[in-house]
Image (cartoon, rainbow, N blue to C red; front, side, top):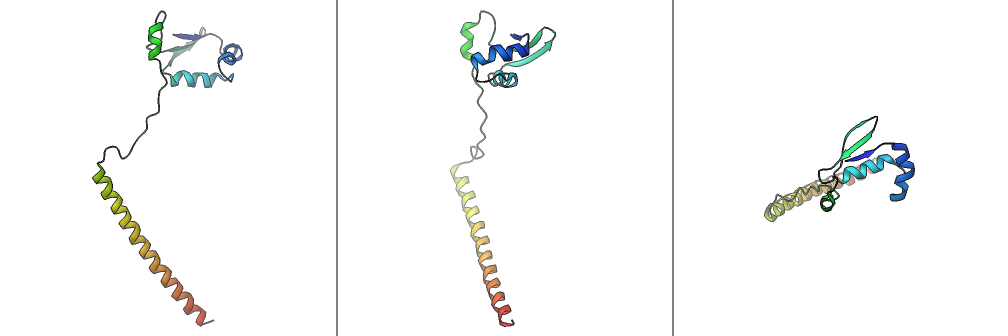
Length: 119
């Protein structure tokens, strides 16, 4: 358990020795990133704990590691064949929309010429 008895003094005197800042909130964010949780606070201080951090547990410190963000791969559950089919369908839809756009451009050009005739 980590107990911080005086948050202001800790931020002013201790944090600059180990970090490039004096920001207590940033320190707490770092604790959380390594799996520590705030378990409470009272007149005595603020308490943080970790299942692998305890007195005499020096060998367990190697198990306290930084949490890595979960990356979601939206294609991980699909086979290459399924992905190929989705890609082909997307290409077909794009080609269809492109053809419609080209047709509208032709119509626009024709209308523009017709309007110029009446000017």
